[in-house]
Length: 465
Image 1: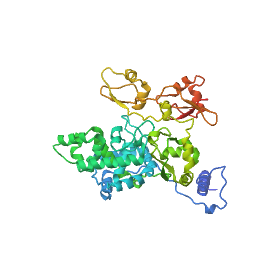
Image 2 (image 1 turned 135 degrees about the horizontal axis):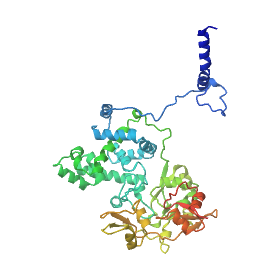
Image 3 (image 1 turned 90 degrees about the vertical axis):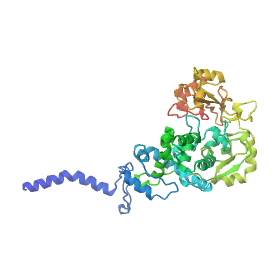
Image 4 (image 1 turned 30 degrees about the horizontal axis):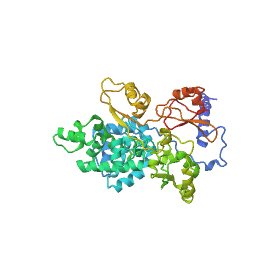
């Protein structure tokens, strides 16, 4: 064999493993050695394997051209501030944008309907992304709640109830109705949607002050430098999301499995009742009832809110309507294991309305311990009510204190399976619960309840024996 022949042969032997591997990948690109191959390989379809983390490049001019071509009621002109937020949501914090995409189909159809009802620009719906990340139960450090982050006082102005068991600020439809009315009133006040959104964030008083300091200017960017720092980023973030969610393909932002809203209808039971009992009688999942009724905080509708409408999955509405009479009678028999119900807060008078929390302004020399003793509550409760992560407070800070705080004794019940259970109270921790029930350690509680961390929340049910 010539030198040339030996060289070619050695090359073929060297490439054999590569050729064999490549031929296998063509026959079945995702082959599993334990997987049975298809009966007819010719029928197998090869699909492209896209890399979903690929982030396309984009420039200021490219984005500007796309924005100019957008057909929206709330057009805007791109600037460096907005472009910086587009880059942030498209590149640096894509996970946040993907989280929003997972949730948007739960709420956007409802947003569209209500914005049209109130004759408002449909694009206002993107403001909820900046407010809450489309989480109907999120709470801010100052006590604002829900998709549209209403404070208790503003929520009451628009008819939203707020007590120990019910918080309408967490109801997506009621909160969106209220947000639409409030934003529309701000638009009538200032005549500009960008300024109306700024006022929604920092209050109309701060906007008027910025207008005065600017010499009477009337647009957001003209009064921009006189607005509070948070508000200066608030409107540009809204505009960045407005652009990005209308150009998902250009930024390779897609989800394989978006989440859609559950079809439901409303019913009024006109009774105080427990969601667990309703789920048992209607053969529903408690988690579905909680998802459809996020304003019910403790799985319990008290006597004071018995006329509120409850959302039921569409699939079970016919059954409920056909059997409504006996279901209502059964609900009237109070179950023995009410979860965090009014009867646990005030056992002498279960139907007693909950009093609004008082607002305390921190004074010089105050510490959480002294404030807690003064109002007959615990430090842990104050930290929970105000979403505080430490004991640090500052002079002038507002603290919300629920004057009808729950009793601090352990409330344990026995379920139908004979398990001893405990409902987590505000201020509880696994360590506190383990101390109350000395036979259990924190490790035991985590093991029995399949907990991966020490995080628990009020209203959660734990097995303790």
